[in-house]
Length: 378
Picture (spheres, rainbow, N blue to C red):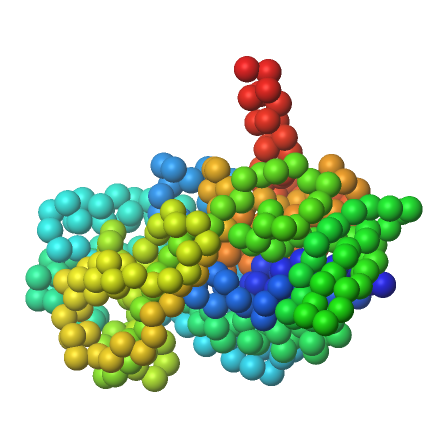
């Protein structure tokens, strides 16, 4: 028996577990594979609020900015509790341009930052290359966004797991949850591991299972159409070439400790296929080489694939559900790592306080119920 059972041991599930445990709740996390399996450890870890403002609702932009502000304290708490580094870095992001259209895009991005009250600095080609000398001589301009930070998602997941264990969170790995139902005032979860079946009772349940939310898991909740979006990334190693994240409209290049670089990422509607492809690899290398030709001599150390959890509007689903004591934190799409601190904070407020904070009201599961009613009426 636990106060809270959390289904899913990714960055969202473990962040919520850590926050709830620090508030005095007994927490059990159930993960079908190993903690971090899936999108969490494949993510680039860029803490960059969306620049697609025209396509991103203001409520989501505000949640992203709220989470970015919470990140330094979140990292400090996790590292103190677990005793492990998350490799948090704050050098910022350098957007680069290769031609006139890119320059117009950077002007637009700069205006977006100014509208948010965040500092951003337009650079000439020479200034851009002075910051990052290994950039291609064809780079004609840049935009330095110093408020963007990054975290090593793999290190974060290891540190989060250690922090949760230090807070007495119980973690059940290689365990599948088959059903969740409310009976006689409690929530019952049927669990299946390789060698046994069991039932876990909890006062509250948080569904944070990512792309597997609706794959074999039976709950009282309405269908929300969770689907996987495949993303391929590449890991390169060798001579250190850059000091900060490089981006343009086609690719991002993320530096990691020890001369490692991460190139990302493709975006493909391929179901649950997790095989890397030659085409995805070719695109990443071609786009990255155009702005950082020195990577030609680096070694390919890994090609990895993750599945981003997405619903139809590409917004997260966070908050209570129509079934008492069942909550959800899922569908974070490309923003799971960025949104982890804010999601953990506000879902904990909802689960402990009994009221839905205004900050997550726009992301309720009820929007899918309303959609289905409109479709049925039509």
